[in-house]
Length: 254
Image: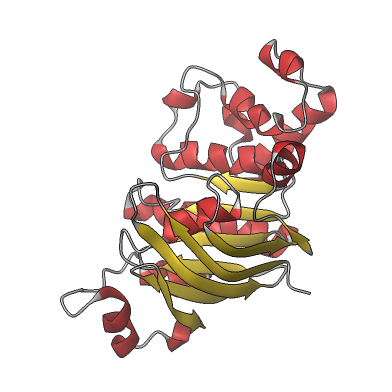
């Protein structure tokens, strides 16, 4: 059984815009799946449907054999707690320490009142430090988050997601706000989490040079439709034009 099955998934926003059209694909445990496509192709909408930040209009999402398409309340909280999410703009609390930001990844399993006053357990603090070691910045634990570089802040966001001990890690354009030199650093940590920890990763990306280096499989969206599902090396010049358009030029990140 696949870890994740998406069946005929569609989403229409309240203004009538249909962002996804009958999307279907499976994800096996341990995959590093990358989703590509132009801005506005539906990549972010798809990820937000998967972790149920938004509710699909039609279709099914099945995770670990459970239909999570329309769950609510406690079931929805458990579902979100089982999925780590990394955003383009980090979403850290700037004036709080790096360690505190990582610990906030336990909010799904920590009583709210205890979290507000910082009553995290020693076990949680130890796990937070271990997560910072995974992304190579344990020495930054007591620094304010806004004192770090963009790449370091994204690594804090990755460590925060690891605190959930997720079955599935979603990354929505995790390097879009970073310079090219930093992009590979962040992607290498996602690769490490995938290969060394066995965590399944689904990542939205723009740059095919990164896709070819890190993805085990690729799907492409265009206008909300799934137009490609295959291996990175199968994306020929013809496929590139199909996905991105006649005027698109591939930009390589070294």
